[in-house]
Length: 272
Image (cartoon, rainbow, N blue to C red; front, side, top):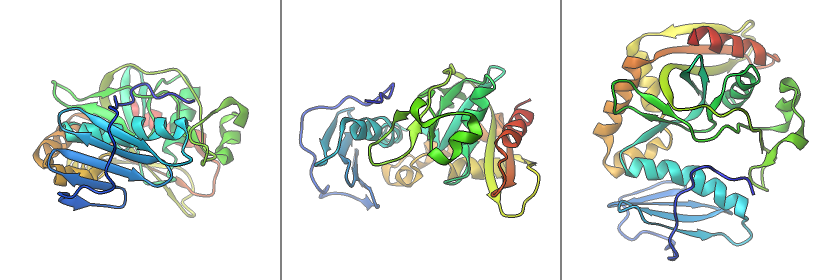
């Protein structure tokens, strides 16, 4: 089983199908006072409580890999929001001892960029969610996993083989590839990755603080839970701290080019 370094502790207690006092519902979440429930079809249900307790029901036919994915990924992020803490929805690496967040929509190349940078010797902090503590003098990125999850079609671009990776979930062809793990580091830059048709050469556009704040607010992991849980003010203060401390840029590459190294070059330039 692929292990997550920080799955949440679980107590032996059944999870209801629905929270009767839920104040907000979404495709996989329900929010009630002091509780969040996640229900991922084919994987399981997990109920998180503000007092720190959590209960979990594995779906019929699901595996231990499925359980590790849910508890170490979505449930971990929901747990942080319940505690008034947050993460950026993206990957993270350290470059020169400073953290760089890699953000973007689905299929924008966040995990691929993290793996390409890791092959250049830059340690990996996170893959799908980069946790950031903004409570000190400067926001600091926290390590969660050094194993970006990659689809088979990008392995050749990185010089990797499918046999080198570990199973993420049996239902997915994605595999996780372990690299050098990064340590807690000050968050230096936020890089949004985009891919456009007929874009040509990879470009960098630096962003002013106002735009950086908007990006951080929208790029919060599991952001639909923030307002229903009642931590909107804490979330805004967290985003302001990040936008004020980290430089921000958008890196745009061509959707149809094999430009992994060009994107890595651009991220290193932003981080310099």
